[in-house]
Length: 91
Image (tube, rainbow, N blue to C red; front, side):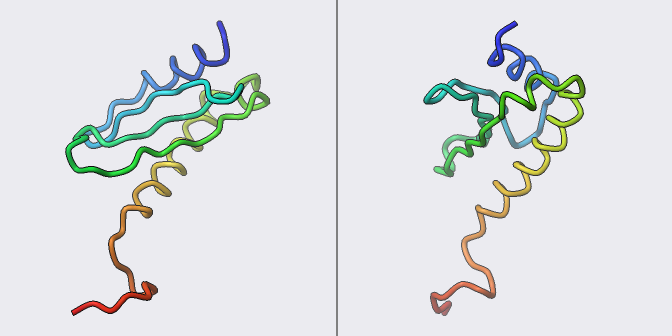
């Protein structure tokens, strides 16, 4: 099984109400891909590198789950339109 196939196999173990998970090869590396099921919202796609040492690790399934959840958190936080720290003025 190639590294990409191994990561894709892990992504298929997860089904989420709002998000789709996949993986791709990009510039010789593997990337986790997270995107909204509703593509019509116009939100960006989240890409995160999956390192070869993690793919080769015997506990890959567990480390992948933690990484996936961390990436989901980051992706959802990036969707904020405004926060108290925003520099723009709100009406």
